[in-house]
Amino acid sequence: MRILGLDYGSKTVGVAVSDPLLLTAQAVETVWRKSPGKLRQTLARIEELVKEYEADKIVLGYPRNMNHTEGERCEKTQEFRQMLEQRTGLEVILWDERLTTVTADRIMIESGIRRENRKQYADRIAAVLILQGYLDSLHQSSKAVQN
Image (tube, rainbow, N blue to C red; front, side, top):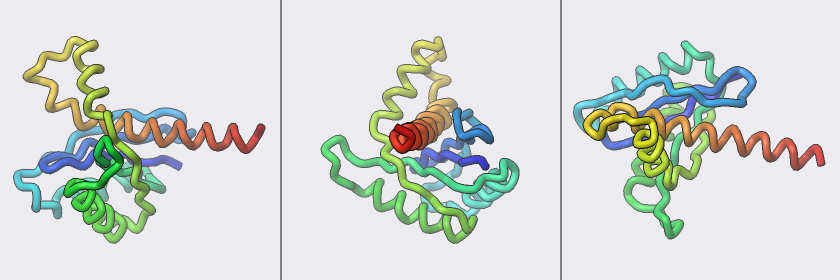
């Protein structure tokens, strides 16, 4: 079993995948599109990645505001979730992605990635953080059940 993690943005989707034991998330790629509304190729690429990695589930970053409200980006993410579920037939779990972009930026600064090169890495690092957060919650839940 593997899980695909996605960071959905207006022009990009960062993609990460779990290892088969569901312990770690690794960056895969950033899917770029020319226009925010042009999702057919993006969905086709994600479907290819689902098959390539034999993913059983998708975790999609959910961009709530810091005060827990949901704005326009949440609405767009819900629409994208429905398209993903229809296209792949997989369960798509929404996962709170607050501060993942800030954390991704900090990781890139600490790694010495130049400012002009950060955009090409930011989305896939954010996807890793989203997926890793979900994987960690699975392990926390299983530990709580065992105790």
